Image 1 (cartoon, rainbow, N blue to C red):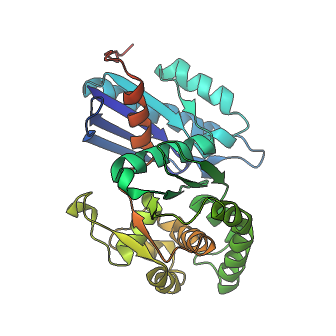
Image 2 (tube, one colour; image 1 turned 180 degrees about the vertical axis):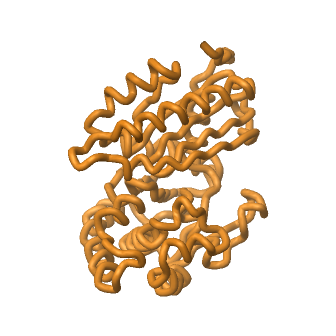
Length: 317
């Protein structure tokens, strides 16, 4: 069947359409992205602004229309940290449902970690052994590990690339002092988590997902996305350190000109790199492998696991 998954993130709203059936490999059919930067539209009082809510409604409506046009049997829509943390999230979700017919499910940080882990486990299989999965989003960092499909632990920390850019940097590019203070602060934040992770043993395979990790790997020499998902890509601590020394002195406008950097995410690349480096060092990871499947694929796989062959077609109102 054809399924659609709508991911309302801190930076982008992403519709992924796949052809899939239980026990089979989901095949991407269409991908549509809209940059909304919802996390930057949170008012000082902690509410999602009216303009932000208006744009979200329009974007979700357009995604629903696309899912109907593309013949999706189901549209699974979810929102992560930006909507989750907005003080008026309940009202925004009601409005989205009323005006678009789409019911956005708000995922907890732990849900994000568990579903991302599921996707990585399915991609790498049982041979990956004790699997450790990292994911950097706009608002949060997810860490999960275990030997089964459901991780032994799953944590979410408010250490997203966009969040740190807004809260730790006051200039573009950030000053050396801002970078150094952020490095020290991240080490402090991650130390307790690293001690807890260590209790579960040394991972047999460390996998990193998300656009941030993919971009960092690309900038350090990994194959471009055009080479396909099955090409092995890694990000090493050594290469990342060299990259940070280079990009931390560049403005967002200049970073956006680099091959593999999305203009809509360039402004948070330095913060994302610092989170990646701090996490790898806290967990004693000299390198991580870049996994092609992440949260959206995890949502699809969980949906397929729960299906009994039903086929509910999405109809427009």
